[in-house]
Image (cartoon, rainbow, N blue to C red; front, side):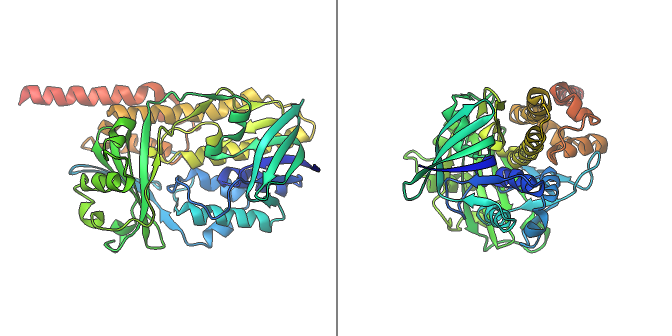
Length: 418
């Protein structure tokens, strides 16, 4: 069996793996990336949030992405019947990017991967990790390519950016149930033949069908649009008696008074995909000689598009800490990595939970709007969930529920007086 020797092995060539490997390469680290699939490949997670732009910029990946002309995402719109709430990322609390992209991930991820290769990083597609053994912080990873050939990769550190593949959590028995209730999604793309010109045609929207059920609409610059329905798993499964995903998504679109005319009779570009019980978690985010990033560690829910933000945040941080460790520094991975990442996860988990209780929706659609509250919530939706100067970050576990209860009390008093 052949052997390779590297400083850092990155598992997975998605956004997290590309950010990690690109940063390490910039700092003269001998890094190798292995990716199980062949790019371009279909993957969900097409709506980004501004925080990711910091990471692409720092990793030197922004120019290549910017040249692609992806649809700019300046904010997001939430619909509930006749009610509308629009968040503008340029009108948020604190500093940070005020725009990002909404992207067909096949093109986006392939652009990232090809840019990584152009930087001189050794990236092997269609190469699967089948075993790993650790000797202290050193590791021996056995991989198999598409021809069935195996080899060993000896590394001083491993960054697992394998996404839904969750390579190390499976191999090292690190998986555990999510804290969130089971939700599922069905999605596809359409050629958006009825798209309106101007902002309406490009605006990403979330149409609330029921408190826990919502439709996503993500227009791309190539004329296609991503459509998806999200809800409790039992609700999603009842959309089609025989499990026909096309029938289920078609029925979901029919439930949207706002979008049924635009998408009701449009053909799907591929058989809609069913993502069942997608939320996941792990027992530990790191161990001797490895760190878990992105969806290989935690995945919450697509409602606020936090997935790629955590992927790139954790990918960049893991790379920085690994570099320091390679340079002989002793790293407190619990404090500097796990505690930091999980703080942001906890903030977004609160927002996801309060979305599905309906409390956050009370704040979104309350009239008249409170501009100060909206700016602070907007900063969270933009991904700046580590800025504790923002009370909607620092007091996330109480502030939404308390404000929602206050709004409900005001409504009840108004009803009692009328």
